[in-house]
Image (cartoon, rainbow, N blue to C red):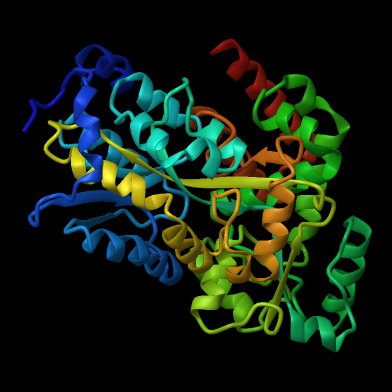
Amino acid sequence: MRKPITNINSPFRYLRSQVLRVLLGGLLSVYMTSASPAESLRVLNWWSSTSEHAAVNVIAARLARENIDWQEVLIPNGSGVAAMIVLKSRVIAGEAPEVAQLNGPIIGDWADLGLLQNLDTVAENGKWDKLLLPSIYSWIRPHGHVVVAPLGIHRVNTVLYNTKIFDRFKLTPPQNWDELVHIATLLQQAGIPALAQSSEPWQVSTLFESLILAESGAQFYRDIFVNKDPRAYADPRFAQALQRLRTLKKWMAKPIREQNWTDVARQFADGRAAMMVMGDWAKGELNAWGLVTDTDFGCAAVPGTGNYHLFDIDTLAMFVSDNSHLAAQLKLAQLAESPGVQNDYNQIKGSIPVLRNPDFSRMDSCALASWKIFSRGASVQVPSFSHRMATDETSRETIINELHSFFIDDEISVEETQRRFVLMANILQKSK
């Protein structure tokens, strides 16, 4: 066991000077060989729902055929905040897991510290540059080297709708805000809540980021969530998105409690709300419960966002250790991109494969729509702020907390919230 790290102000800064970068060299060539029967990998993640467990079991079963045991290190939390805290604490203590679920720019931070295994040889042998969608291949190489194995792509700007309720009122999925207002008003008059929603901070943020994207497109979205431009927060379009969030609150199923996303999905599944805005992992969960896509529910883009794919990418990172697990880690990276694992995993998870040529026969209408829009390229691909694809952790938590305060307290005005966001953006800009 490594000596614990103590008395530090910044774990990442300290680790930069403490971690010995591993010279992989010829060791990478062993990835094609099976690990010993006693080999195992500890995998830290927050995939705790029914469908997530089933998807993970696809990978675990494939690993087992290579005599490698997937040892679950599960940190339940829908947003992954708790898992990231646990991961950092274990790394600082010298007890990093062999594998961890990671998302977004933080991958580059871990790689900068020399804490992630270099997967270049795995990628070269597997021809990942030709196998994977171009933007995915670029994303997993934050500094020119492959450091994570991508599993699947989720579309966050997804609205699920109850087909029975929509058929009963002869409704079609709303394409814009005016159509959404019409549907929500009609349903409210019939005593049916339009939207299932939790007040949990990351779920509020997931709804709001789609409203920002709908308001004025990808560039304004990036100015808000990627660039944190104070001028964007002062823009009337930001105030409009805040007002629309407050308007949506009137049409949500009551009470609006802070509950897990799976509880919100259950509320939707039981017909206690006509729609649910959530990433397509919710579709995977509904399928796992026996609900059938296009029969019991349908998928569409959040009104006003049909031309964009607000994405979240599941990835597995292999953490550097004493190399006793290297063969198993590289085997896992290899298997993660195999067509069989890709198609099986994503069909269950609700996401789409990272492959250029997936098995389209395994995709339902929701997945096909998601793949078609994502495959158009960078001009339509927008990184999800709520799911760690757009910015650093400090900025993300600051923005989410401010937004959550506005959502739960109707006494806080749009104008006051906008002023607070402008101030916050100025502070974040100065802290760069």
